[in-house]
Amino acid sequence: MKCIGVLTSGGDAPGMNPAVRAVVRTALSKGIKVMGINRGYFGLINGDIEELTRTSVSDIIHKGGTILKTARCLEFKQEEVRKKAVNILKVFGIDGLVVIGGDGSFQGAKLLSDLGVATVGLPGTIDNDLAYTDYTIGFYTAVNTVLDAINKIRDTSSSHERVSIIEVMGRHCGDIALYAGIAGGAEQIIVPEKDYDLGEICKSIIEGRNSGKTHHMIILAEGVGGANELAKEIENLTGISSRATILGHIQRGGSPVTFDRILGARMGAHAIDTLMEGRSARVVGIKNNKIFDMDITEALQDVESDFDDDLYELAKILC
Ligand code: ADP
Ligand code: F6P
Image (cartoon, helix red, strand yellow):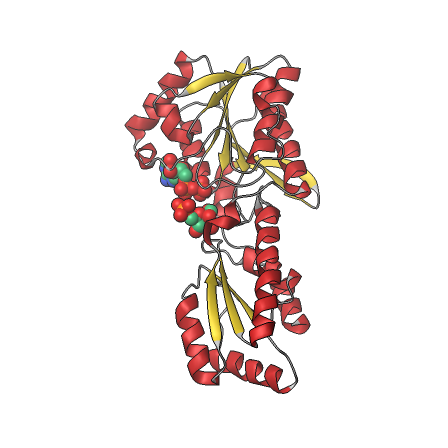
């Protein structure tokens, strides 16, 4: 392995920059040249590639987003397009590829490895929707951002004695809602993995009000959706003023928290070791604080099946 490429793909996530930095500096420390591929698979098929040095990744550890830019490139689902990507990698002398992204980006990496490219995936997504790993890079920063919003909305909600519904990202996964809901002391957490009963929610709002509660915070995962409609229904059924806030892309930005910086650093370094030891079609993960790599196909079979029921039950007790 003399030269590796690195790209970020799919939705950006805070911590991608520390991961890119670790990939670059670990590779250089082992005498491997690094090429940065801009704009994900779109940049790859268009040869948007340049060499990265130690200083290319200076002053980025604290920055959200990704210096390599990211893109969604639907053409990459076509085999002819992926074959073109393989040729471009050959032209640039790249003999191993690190892909930082979510499950879609991993599908692309797996298909590239079927064409003979040595690939390693790092889980970079705020959604935490990859079941093979305890955490993805970016998840904890997004949870912190949501928590900050919950704290602020709680202030105004209490002053107005309102019900507040806060819709958070996560695609089909309820982890951002679950973790931020517990940390923010939400009264209800609504996630796609679990059914909910509107009657029960309204009952608990009225009981809370009767016991002197001045606010009622509901964290709603986007996979369930419908925050505005839910606010209207609750207002109609309880007679208590209700407001919805859809947090949106603010959750994807911001300086990565410590956990995401360390995770990006450890996973980035592990990706280089994996390639140097001759393993391909792998993804890097963390379980019980140990970094590991595993087969990408097996990891993808595991997607979206790891909701933490114990934590969800704990949330119900603590609310
Ligand atoms: P994420 O990686 O965050 O899940 P996407 O699902 O949007 O984000 O996927 C990112 C990119 O990965 C896509 O734009 C496409 O280039 C590539 N990709 C996704 N699914 C596939 C697939 N089935 N085959 C080949 N490439 C894919
Ligand atoms: O996968 C990350 C994510 O932020 C999801 O939580 C969300 O559903 C989606 O990306 C939004 O995508 P876009 O930035 O294309 O609107």
